[in-house]
Length: 461
Image: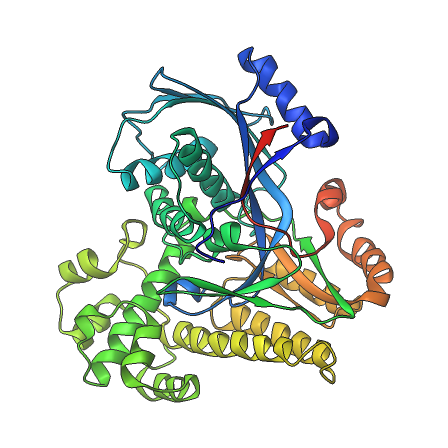
């Protein structure tokens, strides 16, 4: 199933308001009709935060909000990009010379990551010229993967425009790799779920090799997304990449303490694999080897027997080079191993069939533990997110946690089906209405979601 290709369907554009509007915008912009459409969904991660880049499985589902693009193909060797939202500027670039400016994470650079990823994969062949209009319904910088969906959508439409055919796994892997052109060192969850999602089921996504298995969510509860209305842009801030680096350093320290060849190990999961240990044993190892006080550069260099230059070139990423950074290795490793275990427990509760006694409650507890770990050990929450999660729990959620990278963006809450209306009303009154800015954003900030399908191509019937 995963080796399958993204679906390509003929549809009546007139029956889909969003496609209809996009088609009209395209015709107005370029004076011709689109040849095809490509769509890639955003996602909500139910549990498993900041562990994909450490090699551990995560548990997301696609949401109905998506990036949708209309495309025509020509032989101009130019790529013309426009967005239905006027705050995102047009951009034109030669298809033979795609440069991505890491220091300036504009929407079109994310799009060009996807184009360039396919181009490199095809062996630098000349690409067709394209005209595109992009329409997004995923709120930006909200932790619902608007940027990764844009990369995935661009990769998919570049493949289609150049008459190539790649399966979902290949597209996911290319899209995950090419987002690094903009400087985000993510682990691949967002791109994988965007391609591998299926309607009606969440997915356990495992890495190396990439694979996805269905996770049937229990009956009697739904997931509600709420945006705390603080934006966080991963590519523009070093928070995210510092965490990636802290996990990398912790990996080396744990491996060295256990006499492993630490030089070639990069991910916390690799230490577990090499030691053939359980996650519980890894947590004990963290407590034994690492101290809770933050580590300075000097201490890391001394422990690993490397120079500051080696630390900079081999372990730090470009936006984590400044010397003042202290590394909280103990806390970060504890979060990762603990969160990896919670993902597996979450899946096993879901696997016990919908009738599992107090299944919904047990999943809710795992979500609460996950948020506490993100807040206290990984420090990727913020005051507003913590306040929102508390509000959701007070309003009747059985579990609530930040989702996505954090430092802003969204919380996901598990709410018993019979409490949804009162939950929404309560969260609205307690979190959104009192604050004029939030009240204004509330329409797009609080919604019930169900597992949606993956990326697809549409042709006009």
